[in-house]
Length: 313
Image 1 (tube, rainbow, N blue to C red):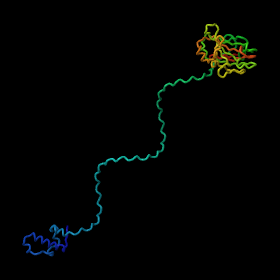
Image 2 (image 1 turned 90 degrees about the vertical axis):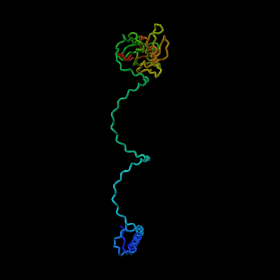
Image 3 (image 1 turned 180 degrees about the horizontal axis):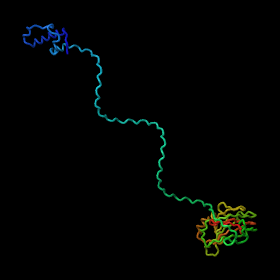
């Protein structure tokens, strides 16, 4: 509310009277002027002054007063709507590898897989050594074992051949009789333990000879003969004079004597491939009629198809 001092109101009163006199009837002039003395303090209000006089009474705007204390914080406004998602940020650098964790518990055994396809058959291995054989002691010659020629006797050490003063013209043979007429293929194993001696070197010519007599295939009455001689082997002949040898003819080379003509050496497998079905009429071991002076031989045992015949007279 506007408040005026007495001095300020003097002009106001005059103006007011003038304004009033102008707007009133002409009889107001005769009434005289009203001075500030006749105006009681506080009786003139801002609404009693016209706009023009009010404007003149306004003073200049004073300087701003000091800021009042901060008002209390208003209540939180309503949450605005979610903004649009921003673009993905760049991939950060790879972190340092963490420490290896403890080993887990072993899981249960899985089910057995399906059996795979059968592999190809491997190559045939070398022939093994003869297996353990039964032993038959032969204490006398005759019957299954018979001697022919000269100088064949049974001793406590084995069957002795000779001595033959001239081993190229004299000799003896020990024959094994076979039962029936077995095929050549039925003989799977032949081996013997024997030695021979001479007073001179024969280079293996005086060594024992193993013979298998087979049915003639040319219509003659004379049998054909397969011959095994230790000194005539194709690989590593073992025919030294003096020591005992264990010869295995079914693992060596053979030659066929067909009417006195010797054929080329053949492995036992080749013999069977050629003549497996031919009948066998007899088997023998001989010493002599070959070479050497004062030629002798001693047979300790003979093995046929796994059966060992030990000679001890």
